Length: 496
Image (cartoon, rainbow, N blue to C red; front, top):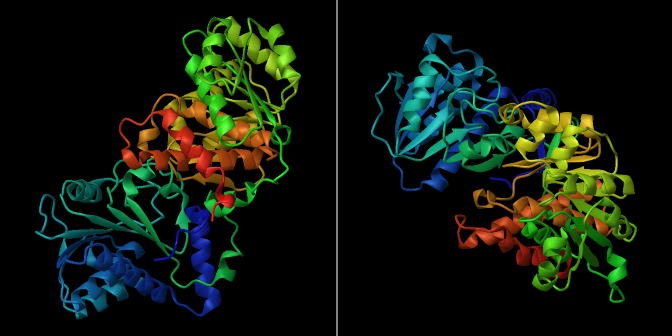
């Protein structure tokens, strides 16, 4: 298996890659099918080396054809193989029929799928639907997936878990819960966001020997943020550096009872390298915050007018953590907007923005799905049903760079391909994580990164910090656990 590539594709892009790979390389579609089946068999052998029996759920399309190739190879290796066919054998056409005929010659028996009958095997393979599925799963296919999901055995899905939409990551009524998914030629964007991460298990990739020049002919609409992309943005510092070289961040927020939010954002900005970090918060607890983290300068402000002198000294403003929905927060948000400074906008600042939509270029918006729903006047379910569409619509309405948080966070600036971050874990579903992210992005922006690079790098560092903190366990993680990890991750080019 290859390392996961950066590029992400939609189903229509993958069809074009397949077409060019067949038309321009001398490969037949059947040879690609045989390579896919062989790659999948290698995954099965490597992942479950002691397994001697396998059940295959195969559809009548090309995904089923990949499964037929795998079944033949498994039988030739002496494994017990049972193929359960969904559909009539007479409906098989083209390459899938050829693969089935070769499988039958190898001695594999094909049986029609029968509801509630499952063979006694050690591993299951899902080869029902491929990337072309765009309708809700029904009938015998639904019954088969439901039965498969009830089995207490590992499941290998070929190309994509059947029932998962390749573009959106939305489950089309029901989908296979895979232990591992081996995907071919190009990464499907739906594997990494929406409901995809819950259904794919470990994702493996094989390019099936498609030449690199083929990929250059099909633009990719999205990409995965990686360390290779982020590392050049964080070079070692000159030995003569001083704090004034690394920017000034002002974090605005912290209504009464929410002081921790502004403190975590401020410390996160400092941990990724901002030179000077100040906080503007409610006078009620300003003194306590100064004592909690003396490296950060904390000011109590009663209204937007008192915030203005602090804004005049700032380079970047992070507004929203703990801001609240009272008039105090509204006044501070208005003053920040009037400053004309680069903004990182989060939490209740987004809720204020949703009430009076505004489009700007030089800001970064960081909504979670609920906030995004308010900003677009739709339901959270509609946001999650197509997160790719949602992040693009948010950018169209509000401008700047938009970060749609969640599993498979998406970043859109309307110019570059949408960035996706697949770092992070369920332990980060905890209060304060968004405040830390706001601070990270503001800290990078202050150090001279543009809004696009600061957003992508910030989301990536935040996710990686969450994964590092989760080494001790996901359940029970707190946002503050990421802070020390951030300092280490923000210095990749300084380490041997």
